[in-house]
Every structure is written in C-alpha cells, then in structure tokens.
Image (cartoon, rainbow, N blue to C red; front, side, top):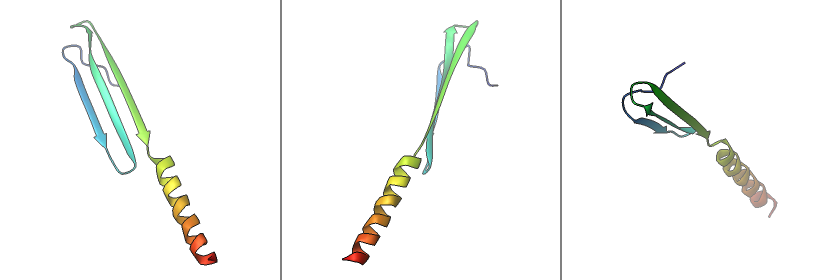
Length: 64
C-alpha cells in the first residue's frame, strides 16, 4: 500500500476515454503524519446510454 507524502502536498490525475482518476496526498503534521485520497470514475453509464440511443434510432429508422 502506498503512503502519503509527509513533506509536501502533491496531486496527480488522468483523463482517459474509459475512466478518470485523481490522487491527492500531503502532510497532516509535517514530517510526522500524512494523508492520501484517491478516486476513480468510469464512463460506463455515458457509453451505455449513447450506444442504447444509437440502437433505438437505428430501429426507429428501419420501422419508418
């Protein structure tokens, strides 16, 4: 397991086609204790909705 940085605040993140992530770390009391917070979000719901909409539009056009 990764430990937070005890000396300085630091953040890191990335954005991709499928997911985004963010990590923040830094000292609570300089040189003695630290924190680390991390999160990740996928775009599965957005992709699923777009795909579902495209399929519905395709079927709607075929039946018109």
